Image (cartoon, rainbow, N blue to C red; front, top):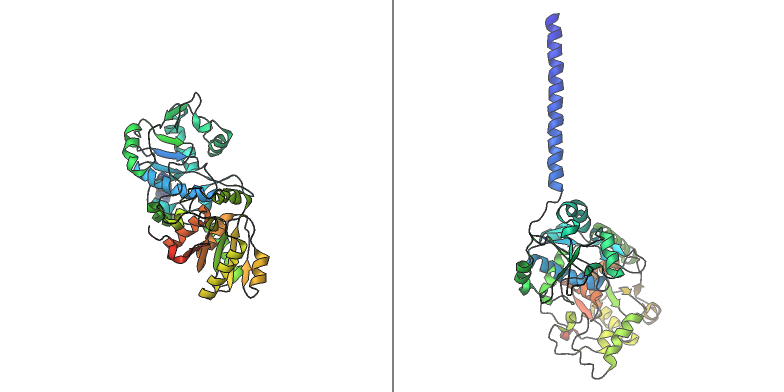
Length: 387
């Protein structure tokens, strides 16, 4: 009997010990997973900027250039939220619109929230937090206006201790060595800029980076649902009409006979960086009649019966339906304009606005996927194709 009791006690002790060992192993596994999933500090430093120049099309243009610049100076790029206007809230976290993993195939990146919440408290305290700008003032230049302060408050960086001058430095890729020599990562852990370190429009040589910008699952679901609802599985023509009041005013520059402009805004997408043809009013703000005529021709040529219209102003919907009653015209006007971009990227053919950065985004994405792009007011033979 005593032997049986002793064996039972020994067995119970063994069970307890094994349980403790298993619990310890589980804790180690959890710690390992936690360590792997938590961001670690990059001693080469970080690039953090406010996307404060223009609307989404401009921001996306300069994002590609900034991504290339971050790689050139070998700093991890902090993925700032997008600034939006209209119905949406003013700041949209980067990953609400685009997936992060595809970008990591090109260069090191980290979401702004992850950087600020996890790394900044230890490695970027206030005494090391400098803003970088083209002039030195008594107060940090990155937050010297409400427009910029709003951004930095939103991302959780309300204060800077001072400023660093970048006078004489260029944002071009071939100038990367001057940045790394002047601002080594050990002494300057974060280069925080009030604007993107990239030109507008994005150089054609950086267009291939568009393939790393992959729409988030929510944008894809919203876009695909709208496509199915509007067209089923039928092919469609996508068009972008830029004719809002702000655009009309911008195009008015071209009414001057001696305006001297070869390119305007994002017109390099259709004219090239050294155009033989000058930008014209017909390219910037084509007439309603010209738009309807070109759409009619493209529908006939490609045997299409569906059209998706994205616009910041007049959709010409009634005029289209009157001129082409047999065609299904859809103007959904989603509250999230990026869904328009997604749908335009999926069309069988796309007709864009030559100087518009919104159209340029669609053009780059369609180029990545081998889909054709046309422009209002421009014959196919004259569209710039060399990248």
